Image 1: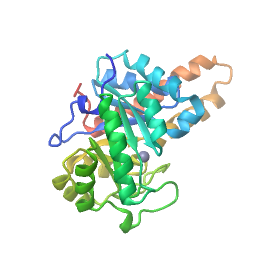
Image 2: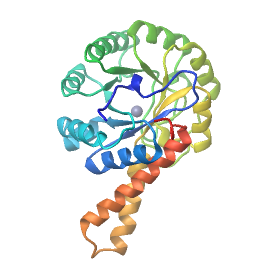
Image 3: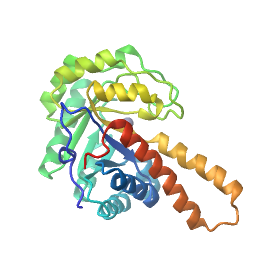
Length: 278
Ligand SMILES: [Zn+2]
């Protein structure tokens, strides 16, 4: 099926399930996610991030996502993750991407409102959806400071002024964690879900234990971003495979690597409640 935007994935504010956003970096990751969507009958988001664009190229990745998403009837959106300048959003939209995230978390609040509003207009003019971010979701070894978490009043105002379709919020998760050690402020999430008029997005899910992720879905998260977890799964698989089966054909290694990633994606889909929703 042709890829769609994020409003066409079947999500609603009320229904307690979330779509998985899976960062892809090459053909293998893309096909693994689409295979999992097909086998789980689940919608999915194929996400293209800045490091992957540097690695593989924006046009190559968007085209790979377009072609491979045709291999399933499950709804698949292609999404630009963490764009920090308007030029790359424009380029991605011109290549036919369905959804874009503008990350203005490093800007002042007013600049974030201004740039995100521009991105929302550009996306909507192309039939695409847009995600913004309020609050700071740190990277690496940093921990979330209470002051960096998303303030509900500010989040409501931001959603209304910018017109975003989805809003990323800071609740305690951290980007790039290789083991699950972060916990989420579920009370803050409940308060955001009650007040903010658009679906909420959780970034940094690889660092959050499964129980907290399930609660986050029950409390209003509707899109969950998964990146590091899949990289860790594939790296572990290759480390073990290449020591045990050095004589095997490389394509067999890749094929089994895709199976390992698809299995990890399917397991996330079941946890997020999106299995069977396509
Ligand atoms: Zn993120």
